[in-house]
Every structure is written in C-alpha cells, then in structure tokens.
Image 1 (cartoon, rainbow, N blue to C red):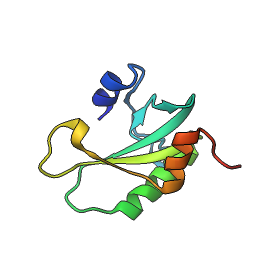
Image 2: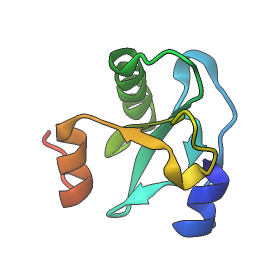
Image 3: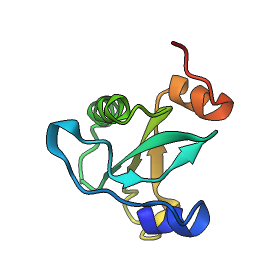
Length: 102
C-alpha cells in the first residue's frame, strides 16, 4: 500500500516501523492540506471495521494527524489500487476541508 501511495501521491510516503502502544499507523508521509493523515493497513480474512477504525483513531491521536483511515484487503483483488478504504464520515469531512474541530 505504501509503494502504491508513493507512486501515485508522493514519493515521501513509506512504510513505518511499528512502535507498540505509541504506534502512529502503518504508512508515513501521507498528507492532506499540509497535515498528516494516519493510514492503518489490514490483510485479514475477517472484517472488524469498528475495531480497525478505533485503532486508526488511536494512532491518529498519537500522530497528531488530521484524519485516520484504514486500508483493507479486498478479497479476489490483488492490485493495491483495488483495495478498500474505510473511515468515519467526520474523517472524510476533515480530509475534504482540511479542518478538524478543536
């Protein structure tokens, strides 16, 4: 996912090293409106959207990012651009406007 985003969005994007409880997501260098966007990646057989979005939110706070998104494997689709992205409607609004309420 990081390689796909680096090729199509910015060459500053790369895979992050895991940091345990202070984790800031799986992909670094993603920005919208000049602010960080936390990206959490999942490749598992069973969906857990609520848990994943909660994890992305924790990591967004750790990263002091504008929004958090989850990129997850779409079964039967091997190309990175075909995978799903899940986020809250609030995070979508923040991505579109660049503003997060205080």
